[in-house]
Amino acid sequence: MDRQQQLTSQFLANRHSLFAYIYGFVRNAHDAEDLFQEVWLRIAEAAQRGAAIEDPAKWSRGVARNLILHYWRDRRADHALADEQLLALIDTAFAEQEGRQDYWLARQQALSECLQELPERSRQLVRLKYEQGLTAEAVAQKVAQTAAAVLMALSRVRQVLRDCSLKKLRLQGFKA
Amino acid sequence: MNRLEQLLAAWEDGTLTAADAAELKQLLADPAARRALVEDWMFYEALIGALQSQPGEQPAAPRAASPAPAWHAPIARWFAQLAWPGWAVGGAAAALLLALGLVFLLPRSEPVAQIATLQGGVEVLHGSKAASPASQQWIQSGDILRLAAQSAVVITWPGEPTLVKVTGPAELVVPRQKGAKTLELRGGKLLAVVAPQPAKKPMNIRTPQAEAVVKGTRFTLAVNRTTTRLEVLEGAVALRKPDTARDALTVGAGSFAEAGPDAGWQTSPIYGSATREVIDQAPNDAPLAATGALVWQEYVTSLQAQGWPMGAARKTTAQYLQRLRGFLIVPSDGEYSFWMSSGSAAEFRLSTDEKPANARQLIAITAPNQPANAARSAPQKLLAGSRLYFEVSQHFAADAAITVGWNRPGVPNGGSLVEIIPGECLQPWTGGER
Image (cartoon, rainbow over all chains, first blue to last red; front, side, top):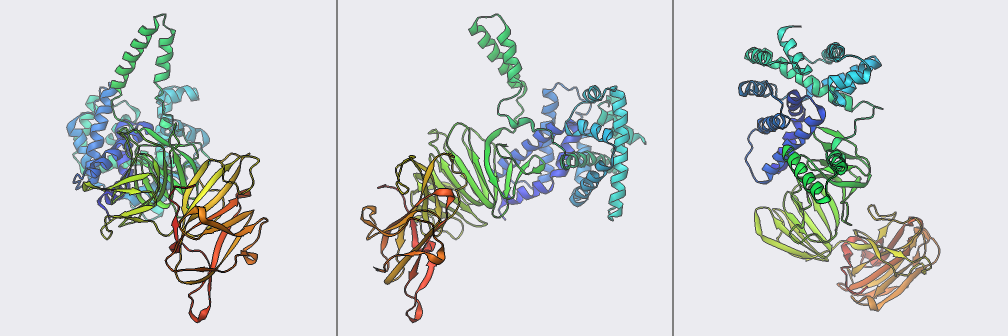
């Protein structure tokens, strides 16, 4: 297989982990998608130039990390998280969990089922926060609650979804 | 909730302090804590993916769907309200927009072209997510289009009559556009109709084996695992290999070239297809009059066609002529009888040589017929190797089908082979005399 196609395949196979890595730092789905797209463009351009990329997953996280630092700087976000050591530890964490794509895909499917089982109000909160990317304050305005109440509700819903999805995964034979 | 979970929740809620981050760093020295962090972050990834795949839910509209950055408009409106002289407003607005642009220096994926039409299984991979696109949807730099077998998509660029039609199975990547239109065809087939491009910004289409540089023309590109094949219908395309940019081939109309480990690096006349054209007609034109503008041109691999060609613009009140033409390469000496079936008025003309002026009508149909009752010509004595201009014209009513075949001699025991005229005996029309 052509080197570019191989790189594309490797990148796509790793895309769930990379997106999770980026989202974990920026906490906005739309911005995370933009940054993910930018990482992909850069890896494609590097491949086009003939750059030797031995470990595409690690390379992608490195590019993503730089883009995230720019992202924080552009938004003047005085980030407690922009700590080299902390970033390196998180990079190590993701490197240690490579190769579990089938588990992550199964988890997404399980979560999709669990979402259907939520009460409509809880589903609405989750959609506003994680699909539309609204801040807690913006969600609070929409649902006529305080931001603190929204955060508490979301914390509870996340726990419900976690427990539900892990139960489904265990039934499928996955070790969570 | 243990301390790690509390810190991860605070991170999610945006309430993590510097002291919390320092504490988190200490906890992450433990591999189990690192695993828990990844689990936590993968949970959000899976949740976002699950939300986007919910049936019946309307996903949030992609933010970058419009080509105009959203922050321009309110800034422009604010300046418009100021009671300044026009030049001062313009200058100040430009300065502020430039400053804001510098703030947003972070390169972004940008809209490149639009999906005009699509059929069959087409998927766009944007960011980490794959979705079925809609007509008029913008494609952005970084997007990957994947087409299943027997699917197709037509992509257009705003403000010019350039289009690219990709037929599956295929994979098309849209890289960052650095001023010029650039696509990467990783596999499959592509037909391009390219309006004249700026001199220093020709369109580039890259494949694993070659790169086509296009200033304005019509051509097809077909890519498989080892070979790229370029066929030019009109104009000329420069084809070059990625590793030897100097060794470029200029491929002219009616010629093809291939790039790949087993391909010779040269141009050759195209075999294996005829030219299919759709021509606009004036309302009172006779059904087979070719008076109007060429609306569409493509290759077909045998003498048959059915349905409106995907990608061709169409006016509902107009009438059209469909024409298949090119050159017949006679395979063997003998007598040939031609036959034709058509869903509307049509005629078949064959020249005695390569010149269209010498073409004579062999078959005429005024009413629809079926292949079982195909109209036939008188036998024609032809010589092997002859290259004869032919033309099939059809009143393209209700997208009527048309098929032209022959009884071909040279079959053992003195029989003849009844078949639709195959691509191996055809060469396309490459322009010149109309």
